[in-house]
Image (tube, rainbow, N blue to C red; front, side, top):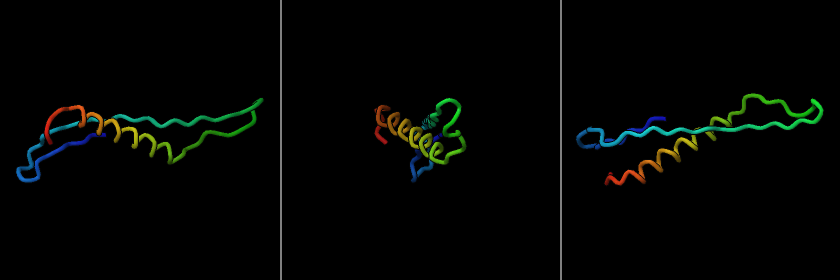
Amino acid sequence: MGVRLFDVKTTIIIGAFTGNGLGNKTTKSFMGFGERAGYDKTLEGEALRAAIIDVVNQIASDGSNY
């Protein structure tokens, strides 16, 4: 996920950050029986949340005064 910070008066970009995130899904089975892995929209939400946290941490540790 890419994030750019810009000055709203001048429209000059004052910072650019890239965040990465990953969602995980595990399944359980016993002797071949159990849950099946399929698409789960919460995976998308988990990955997005992790990417946002990554960007916020980068902005906080950058040391610039935005």
